[in-house]
Each structure stands twice: as structure tokens, then as C-alpha cells.
Image 1: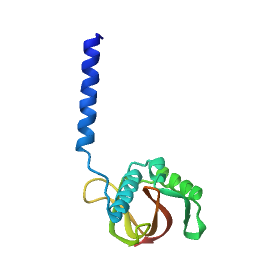
Image 2: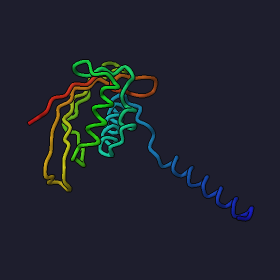
Image 3: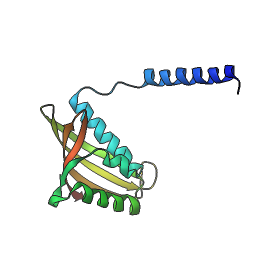
Image 4: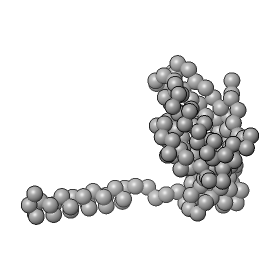
Length: 150
């Protein structure tokens, strides 16, 4: 590749990168929007069966129902993601109640569906009660309880 071609490739890369930065939305500044963005990110990671992506949203301080630690939660999620026959994840009835600007209580129903399109062949539902707390600039899950919904 000539020096001129290399310069054009570098310039195109810089222009493309600048365009992506310019077009990407600003991160939400409102605490509720930030919590909802953290939940959305975890939902997308679950649907993609991306355990590291899902665990990014879980605090090192996490304690779940029955005293489940972060490591135990990771093991449970690993098994669920590995053997789950579902291919769609949807959160419904999501309520976020802020406690100042450092904590939030969240309730939501998670639907784990198998099939394609709107009419899935099978779905399991779980009701979650979650607590998120701000850790630096990020919101992380610090507590969770869940029950199956029928």
C-alpha cells in the first residue's frame, strides 16, 4: 500500500469514527434513565446469552435471595444460559423507584420465551424485586429476589 493510500485509509477511519461518536446518543443523565439503561443492557446480555456482559451489571457486593453471593449467582446464570431452551427475553411491568440519586428499587416481570415471532411456543415468567446502587458512574445490581409467575 502506498503512503497516499495509507493516508486515505487513515483519514476515512478517522472520519468514520468521528461520525459514530457524533451520531451516538449522549448517556442518560437522569438517574432513572441510567437505571433503566443498566437494566436494558442486562436484558440484552441475557438474550444474547452473554454471561460476562450480564455480570458487568452485578456489584461485587451482591447478595440475593437466600444469601446468594455474586459468585453463586454467576454459577446459576451460567447453568440457566447454557441449558435454557428460551431464545427471547422481555421485561414487562418495570417500575423504578429512586431513593435519592444513589439507589433504586426496581420491580419487573421477566418473560423467557421459546419460539419466534409474537406467538411463542412456550414462555416462563418470573417476578423480580431488584435493588440497584450507584458505584462511581455506573448503576449495579446489589440485591435481587425472584419468584416464578404462573
